[in-house]
Length: 212
Image 1 (spheres, one colour):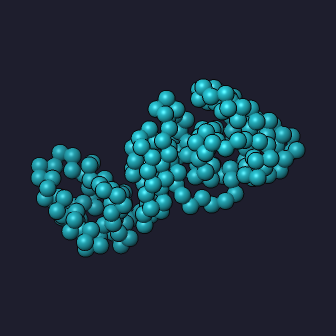
Image 2 (cartoon, one colour):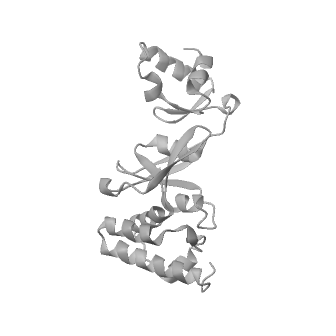
Image 3 (tube, helix red, strand yellow):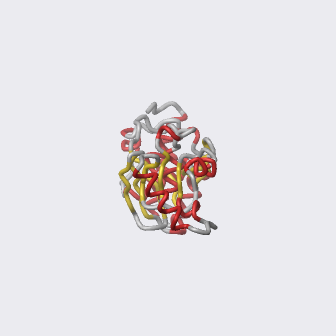
C-alpha cells in the first residue's frame, strides 16, 4: 500500500485505526511494515498501539478530540468535566478528556492531549449521544448523565454551595424529569439525593435566586 492510497482510504479522517485498516487485507504483515516505516518517516504519529494520527502536513481536516477519545478505548463516551464543558455548563476550559468505559480504567498522555478513562458498570453505560464533526463521530454524555457520572465517579458529597463553587450555569438545558429518572436507574440512594439537590439548585436559578 502506498501512502497516497492510505490517505484515500481514510476518506480525509486523520485518525488511523489499524484494526479497521487491516480488516480483509490479504497481506497484513506487509501493511504493518509500511505503517512502521511511515511512523519512522514522520508521516504518522502513534497515539497508542494500533491508533495513529496523520502528521500535520498530511491532514486535510483537524482532529476532533472527542472522536479520538472514543477511538482510544471502546466502548467509551466523553463525560464528567469535559462533557460539562462541551455543554457550556462550567466556565473553565478542561484540558483532560475524561471518558467512562465498561473496560479497565486507563490514562493516555499523548501529543494530541490527555485522555483519562474511568470504569463504570455495564448497566450504567447509557445516557450519551453521538456527535459528528468533519466525518468524525464521537460519543458524549447528555448534560444530565454528565452531572450524575461526575458525582458518582468522583465520589463528591454534593451540596448547593458546592454547585455554586462549580459555577454551574446554563442549567435550563437540563431536563429535570430525565435527571431524576436517570438517577433512579443508578439504584443508589446517594445519587438520587444528588439529583434532588441539583433539581432544587436549578429551580432556584430559574427563579433568579442564583446567578452562578
